[in-house]
Image 1 (cartoon, protein in one colour):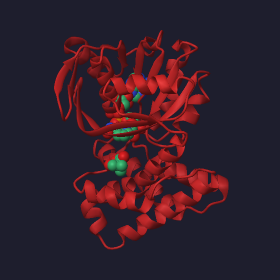
Image 2 (cartoon, rainbow, N blue to C red; image 1 turned 90 degrees about the vertical axis):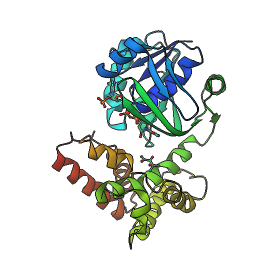
Image 3 (cartoon, rainbow, N blue to C red; image 1 turned 60 degrees about the horizontal axis):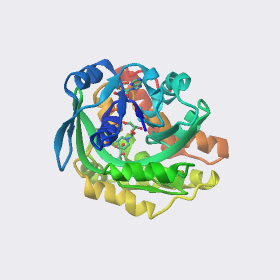
Length: 302
Ligand SMILES: NC(=O)C1=CN([C@@H]2O[C@H](COP(=O)(O)OP(=O)(O)OC[C@H]3O[C@@H](n4cnc5c(N)ncnc54)[C@H](OP(=O)(O)O)[C@@H]3O)[C@@H](O)[C@H]2O)C=CC1
Ligand SMILES: CC(C)(CO)C(=O)C(=O)O
């Protein structure tokens, strides 16, 4: 089965690379610098256990998804609508689109554009682009995917390629659990320009995070979502296990790029307003990040 990857960035290149390395026909669709490098010398896949150059097809043309039975959709949340519209005319009717994105509404937004099955995936990985056509895997790599008609087959295909995958009937709840971590850490790390260890050591930060988490849980409850696990413990563990890490929002801001904040705290604020749940702490964080992004000239969120 041909596999298309929409968004040849950190996540797309890691998972697409693992699948290509396992012998699947994979095409990575991305920006010219990465595509040119991969066409010339393959994808440089640097993981914690091996480093390999993986031959892979690459294109800047969204039409390259034609003929794909599975598409990994790996753009940032702000690019979901544009990238979804670009692949829509070229997708086979029976393709399955797996959304490998943070935030809880990408599947819904993508499904509104596509008649094909769109399945959410919770992505537990740390990966980055270290240069054109060069992906660096810094840890983990598991996926939790939502149920789908061919969910079992897709999970097996991923497993066989060395990607630990399970199917969960509550993938949306798991996406919310991750969203809550993002809401607690991402904006604060970006605003303070601090890694998590220093961030939580500052007086009052843990209390702000507690307020943010309580609001998120109230919105999730209002939306009928059951958030699995011990959320407070999960929040505590982030700073304890990655004290030197800056949030992806902080990293985007440092690069002058638009972050996903509108789909993190911003989503909680919008959903809270819709459900009549107050979200003052999330609102303040979302607004301050928006102001900072406007000051550095990052394109407005979408
Ligand atoms: N990196 C990580 O470790 C993790 C990331 N995630 C989530 O995964 C998702 C993807 O993140 P990540 O891979 O880091 O992001 P990246 O920015 O590294 O990758 C996305 C790539 O897609 C490109 N792109 C966007 N729109 C198009 C388009 N229309 N056509 C072709 N290429 C396009 C982007 O180019 P450009 O930048 O020029 O727009 C970029 O190169 C996000 O939701 C993120 O939150 C989840 C867990 C971990
Ligand atoms: C979980 C967390 C907060 C880890 O850095 C993350 O996903 C992010 O930075 O976006």
